[in-house]
Length: 81
Image (spheres, rainbow, N blue to C red):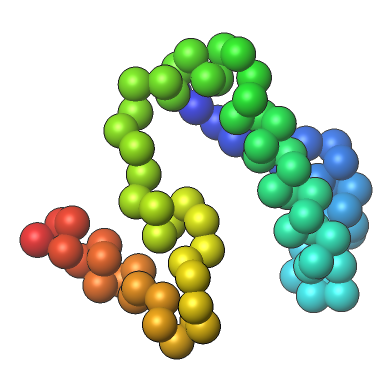
């Protein structure tokens, strides 16, 4: 089992009001760095090494304007059908 959870720096960035939008950009940046750091830990890398490669459209931002990006709901529906 793998658990990725907020670290102290993430919680500091979020502040006391988790629903506040005023700090969202900082929270996103801190959370992305925190997740990257957690995923780079040797023990976690070892646990995840045999997973199949992910769908590139879900890993990186697709090229072009957002109106041309794949609909993820439709993608998920195709996988379960």
